[in-house]
Image (cartoon, rainbow, N blue to C red):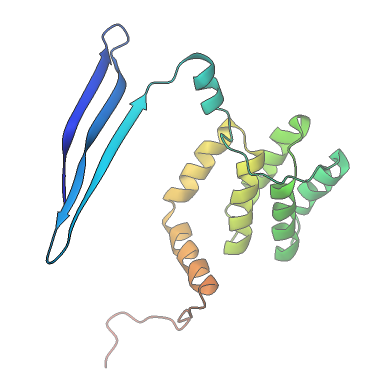
Length: 180
């Protein structure tokens, strides 16, 4: 494949930043017996003012289909996050993920969800991530970024994916330098 075209950068000398990037070109692949050519056009601009404010609100695009919940329901879900039962914690996260955030309780809910986000059970963590996407605050971004960088979580996500895809995981312990 080959990408060819023309790029234009608009630079703001006062702010010392790139204000806009434009690219027009073609992506082409040549092979036997076919030839494919796709036209591409790309434009990226620096956001300012009201447009920037709208784009940086967390979450930028909240999930649709929220359930209108009362403060009592939200507080009950928050209290269930501290349960010793994995099913209760998972259900509480799922409930919070489906509820319309109540501004007065957002910070409390976010802190409670952040406490569950490193749960040993991968399905609880998955629901906690979804709930934090709804109830999260500016501080929650750092928590999510740290979680994504965590090697153990990446392995657990792979295990969850295998389970959802019908795959099987070999639970036998591996032995290094085992004799055959």
